[in-house]
Length: 307
Image 1 (cartoon, rainbow, N blue to C red):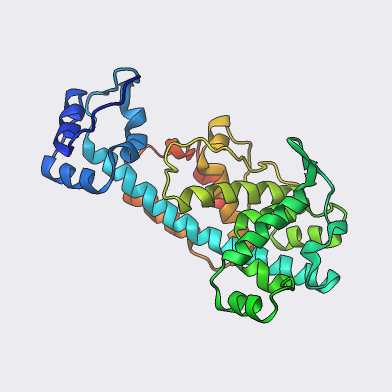
Image 2: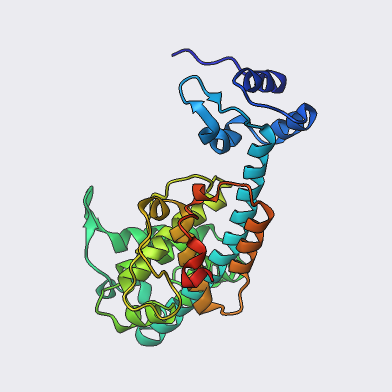
């Protein structure tokens, strides 16, 4: 297929109009398209089409509705990033503390503490060994003053966990936690302190939250997105308010379940947080948006955690 000819902003607006999109203010639309690319916005209007081959819009579709969705999604991602920061810092702190107290500052290098499972595609290296390779790459990239000092003063020594784990990503923390041997009491203790009874519940949640964190870090869309990582829904004797009935499949695959998981963890690690309050206030500012696109439907407000 031949490459398409690039379109000017005026051409983009003309094409959208030809496909049935309405505009209250074309000058304002021109400004938005100068600063938010056509294909970034496309994810927000995809479900507003009535023909996905011809890309024609449903009657009564307005460009301003697309911008409202875009701005809502942006605000939601900012709120969720706050929640993720709280969860990530709590996890980091607990892993450093409990595992260092039990096994010393270099516990993360001790292969006897980790499962020996290997990648199906690479039987020569364990998951733990690969995680350490990733961890050390982040260590040598870091420009944190205490890490630069560590590299300068102790160039051939491994850094203690309370230094090196402060500068690694949530993805690496999640991998380290998941790969810890299941019988380690510290693994269970960390899960318990995060509000969960089983380490596999926490591992599942951390993977899903890391996935959302990466979406947010790249300024990508949560709106109407199907989640690749799905957190465990049915908890073993939840320690605080959770869901009071099974979710529908569409709620599980949309962001609703992951967002609810974040609220649960924030309730445990920072009881006075305002994450849920901010989400509810954001919803109140856009009452006409189809929130079911995020999985918020089927009387979601009646679940104990959302009351």
